[in-house]
Image (cartoon, rainbow, N blue to C red; front, side):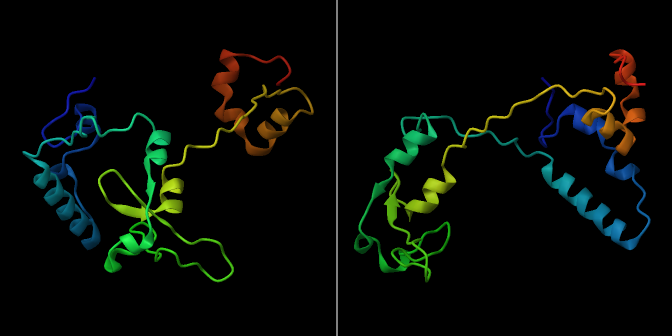
Length: 170
């Protein structure tokens, strides 16, 4: 685990970037960018690194549990000035012509109301995708051999080929 300074930069990140004072800007644009970077880095000094909040009794175990907890509420129960989804800004109950995309309000445990479709989309679980990987052949007439000859990859992957020689690739 790397050490982190007060500004939140790891020791590796500090070593990889030259000190702002060591950089010599050439153009007025670079000079302005240099000054902004120096001001930003100076503003980080003495600030604590962000730490996320710890889970408590109001924390959901899963996204699915959170989505199931959304409580549909009647539009009339929402104050007039708040009758739009804070995420998409569409007024609750209104649709776009030719679409079935009306937002119905749902409330979180904390009492904030959002559009149900927005929240189900924002917090939906990713759809699993199955990807089948097959070994790439470099034999004569194969797609691998064509790739190597068409793109000049042969020299780029030469060291890998020497490490794992393929007798079909010459």
